[in-house]
Each structure stands twice: as C-alpha cells, then as structure tokens.
Figure 1 (cartoon, one colour):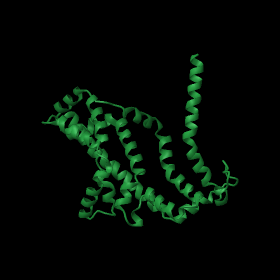
Figure 2: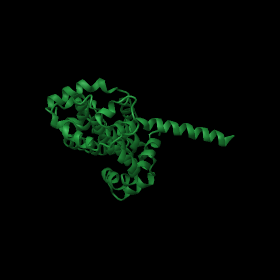
Figure 3: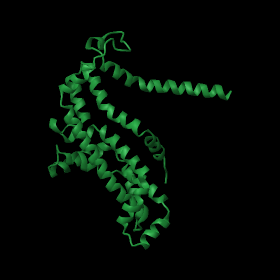
Figure 4: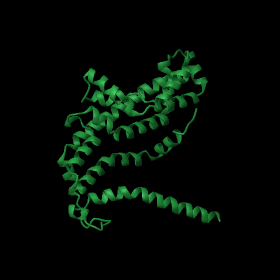
Length: 272
C-alpha cells in the first residue's frame, strides 16, 4: 500500500516538474526555429532546422553586452554593500547590548512589510536632488542594505558560542576584529546564502532600473530585454533567443551552487 502511495506521489511530482520545465523548453525550442516555423499552427515541439544564428542576430540587434556589464556591476556592487551593512547590523543586534535593541530590531523587521510602490516616489525625489539619476549610484546605493539579510545573519550570529566572544575580549580584540577574524569565517554558509539571494534578486530586478535609468548606456539586462521586446514584438525566435541568454547565467549559477541554494530555502524558514 505504501509502495503504491509513494509511486503515485513520485508520478505526481514528475508531472509537476515537467509542467514547470515546459515554458523553458518551449522558449529554448522557439529560439532555434525560423520565423515561419514559430508562427505555424499547430506548433511543432522541436525545430525542423536548428537556427543558432538567432542568438547572434539577437545580440547584434541591441547592445546586450553593455546591458550585461551594467547588470554585473549593479549586482556585485549591491551584493558587496549588503555583505558589509548586514554583517555590521546583524553583529550589533546579536552581540551588542544597548537600550531598546529589541525594539529597533522589530522596527527593522516591520520595514519588510512596506510594499515597494510606497517608497518609489520619495526615493526617486531624493536621488534626483543628489543628481544620481541615470548613474550606477542610483542602481546600487538604495539597495545596499537588506532587512532580510540582517535578520538571517543575526539569527546565525546568536547561535555562536559565547565562549568564543569572551576569549576574544580577553585577548584584547575589538568588536570589528571579532567580527572580521572570528564571526565571519564561521558564517560562510550563511554569507553564501545571502549572496545567492542578492544576486538572483538584482539580476532579475526590473522596476527600479526602469525608473532611475533613462539612457541606453545605463540600461540593465531586464530593461534592455523589455525595450527589445517592444522593437521585435512579432519576431518570436529572436525574443526567445534573447530570453535564453539572459536566463542562462542564473541557470549556470544554480547548477554550480545547487547545494547552497537548497540550504538557502531551508534557512529562510528560521524563526526567532
């Protein structure tokens, strides 16, 4: 009875997995078809002739290399800032004692409940007065602190033995030295988790780059794809080819860091 139940569950999971992969397969298959074959009805599952030239043509149509470079700068710049600010804030909330510490931490957590459209306009006005619109500063600095990353690191820092901190204080280390020499080396799995979340979020970011960038030279990969979709709205093979090589870096990242990503989702369920 249990074997039949397990078989039924496995079949259901397999069906669900294939259903989830179908859009990606369809995108990849369409990217290798001719324009006529992509519009044919009923549609074919596999391309009759592999048109790898669609990838070269999509890359030639717009400056995707520039968009990739902008996205890489934005992604790694933001991730680095999040590492710095989150580590410092998490250490303070986990290991320092100051008045109203738990109250301020609750305020930090409450910020996660504020939807993005509420602070879009004030943020744009502030950056406009700084003269940062259409620059990398506007893409990176506003996202240099992340409440969820602070929460995740703080929970991990609280699990470290108090004896480590007592021994470090006896040796005369300052809080910054304790953080840099002891806490961060013991927190590599959590730091990798934070990094993965930040890279995926920034690579897929669309609304904020669309608002704060105006020139073609400052577009990111997602906004560039949106403009490319407007220009080539009926050329489905080129659109799918562009979507494939934009998605490819994250898929490669997933296969390289599959174990850490699975642990990330497990750790995201931590509760205080």
